[in-house]
Amino acid sequence: MKNHWIRTIVIFFLGIWPALSEETPERIVWNVVSGSTDKWIQAFTSHVRDGDIVLIPEGNGGGVADLPRALGKYHQVSAKLRELGLKDVTYGIYTSDLVNVETVAAGIKAEPGIALIGYGYEPGYAREFPKDSDLGWTWPNALANVTKAKTTAAASGKRLILIPNGRALLESDLRKFAWNYAEFLTKSGADLMLVQTQTWIGKGRFEEAIDKLASQLKAGRVDFSKVSVQVTVEPGQVSNKNGVDAAAALQAVMTSRARGFNTISLWVAYVDLNAPLDFIGSLEKSLRPPAPKGH
Image (cartoon, rainbow, N blue to C red; front, side, top):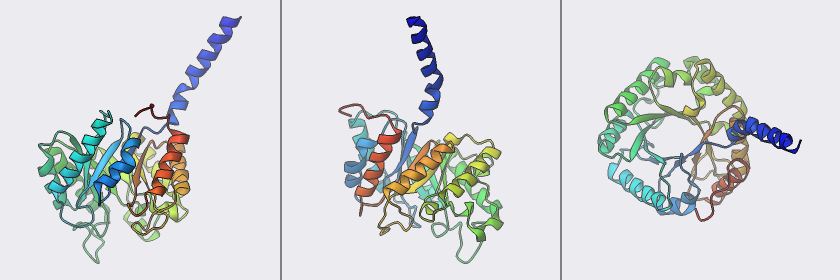
């Protein structure tokens, strides 16, 4: 009788194990924001885990991509993570403007440690969005631009992670352009997508936005593991107007997890590292298994 009871308990836990595992985020996309790489390393590298993605933003603010600077940051961060014993971190350079995509692709073609090119697609940061024009928002043009970025990345042996603006999910004056985030992947050939959903957290509409995104992905039969949702943790909003506090960011993560998203992108500002560290601490405590001692 005792052995039967033990077998029943074991079978029960084996049965619910997949469900429990699904509650654990697979990965975080870390953005090494512009500024002191030393500060980012000191604050965040101890929280990076195997399976995570690290993006080095370079030329994603409308400027020209400086490859030596980006590669310097990559080598600095990757060396530290190797020192910590991590062996399965994916690295990428996050840029905007198709000209920058070409520059990055040529500059990292011979760098085997960098697997991704991030293509930020949003107004104000690229020639794809001419001033006083709807050209960048028009769906056929948007899809063509992403397809070109994918072709450029593939020619250099790299995968493309598309990083589109999230405003088109809900903003009323953008509905006419009928952006389909699922088709950004299925029709352009992009490998991954990071949707800039952070703006909707502070506006109290994150749940609505994430439901719209999930609905499109389900209709397009897109694997949710290919899609990241973004939170920006900076309640003072000095550097990031879309920043929120740690509690709001954590609630957004919980909401996205409930919809099946298992990758979270984190954007921060060096002016306030306490808030994102509070967020990471809460995330690790509530959603992730504890880190091995000494790691």
